[in-house]
Amino acid sequence: FPRKTANLQTLYEIPPAMVGVIGYLVICVSFNAWLTDGSVLPNILVFMTDDLDLTMNGMHPLPKTRKLIGERGVVFNNAFSTTPACCPSRTSFLTGCYPHNHKVRGNSIKHGCYDKRWQDELEGKTFATALKKQNYHTFYAGKYLNHYNENKDIPKCSVPEGWDHWNGLEGNAGYLKYKLCLNNTLRSFGKTYRTDYITTNIGNMAEEFLRSRRPSDNPVLMVLSFTAPHGPRTAEPKYSDKFSHARVPRSPNFNYDSKDTKHWLTRQAPQKLHENHIEMLDTILIRRWRTLLSVDDQVERMFNVLRSENLLDNTYTIFTSDHGYHLGQFGMQPDKRQPYESDIRVPLLVCGPGIEAGKEEDRIVLNIDLAPTILDMAKIPAPSWMDGRSFLPLIKPNILEEHVLSWRRRFLVEYEGMGSEKRPKECSHLGPNVHSCHEAFCCKCTDAKNNTYECIRSITDEQNDLYCRFRDDQNFIEYYDLKTDPYQLVNLAANSDMSVVYAEDRILTGFRDCQGISCQALEDSNFSKRSDPP
Image (cartoon, rainbow, N blue to C red; front, side, top):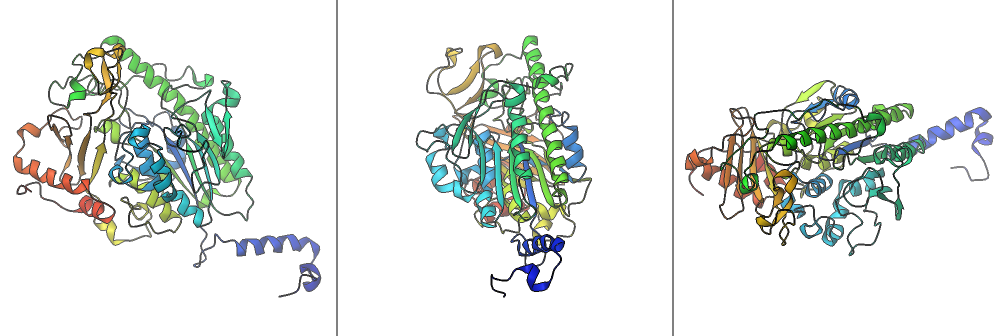
């Protein structure tokens, strides 16, 4: 190699105008995103929403998202969250693990949400840390875990391992008057929509990050985690008149009195919702949809930026939610945390290089699959302790893998209920161990300690059912055949052959202790419905 005393131009008599061009090419050839087979590592962009449902037409306010991602790629018709609560679901997204393995069981610090154990043992095992080691340039903006920057045992504005550019929301939700940790610095935002609205600000930060890149920079991993449509459901003024006539779908399970056929929480306040409650539910739906219009704007904005920066063709894009939501189904007040379709079904749209456009995929995919899929996109093998698996082989026609032939037939849904040791002030007759009980909703509660359950959700050509066992003093069982009862109105548990119950319990017992490949084996196996007792 020439010594430093000679420069490129004088050594090879290169015209001055060509020096910069050759320098650029040298940088690109030496760029460490090139793989040994000559391909280039892709960029990866994830849009995460909060509480976005599918069963109440939650994707309706997102036409740009449906067009830009869904029509350019794949729409998953059977995408689910393995737990219908924010913090455990988001932990599963980051780690690829079922809640019984990552141990974050609920939305409180006491339940493991952003506790010291999470930071010490798990935060260094997310897909972000793996991609960072693969020389990805990483960016996160928006909601992280519910109690981020609120745990006194963890240093303030602690930047999770693996993230180069960190813009994490303090706490759980907010649209105005919120705080972000901009790397290690806490910044407070006000209540001016033009400068402070969080959905737009997430887009501002993401665009600045992308525009600041040089052509020779490493590939990017970006997570844009919106608070919409979570409460308080504050929409931008420009959308304040949209969807004024929208209503919660009056499906057969809407305000349905299930009497004694469902677990305690659904029947602890037996009254059906009154007309004023239903009007409130319609208003909540309208407000949710209005916040999603701003999310739709930011999705379009990111696509425009990617296109203008010549990054779009080499970028995988994922759009999803942490879990679903219910509004009046089975007469319940607005929330999640239930094992029903409204709460566990999530939108999932994916597009990117090599993915066939305009496709729908009916096989089961889960939130625990997102981490191994992101690793697969970055050419990184998933560690054996991850319970999920990459769904990339399902949607890239040039990939043929043996495990696709025996893809998932069932999965575990699990949740640990929350309840205060004190009686609720508004509904003191209920006693302790309940959560968020509101007199305005007939003292219906959103959660209780006995709202703790494990379920098996199965979807095959032959069956489509949900089997749940609650950890309460009744050892309550719910069992629904969704082929004949898609709205989960008829609990078959009491009238089922005991051999069916034994078979489901046998599978459930296996799932409680599974990890990694043993979870996948249980998900894929063709068990008989009729089995001798375990």
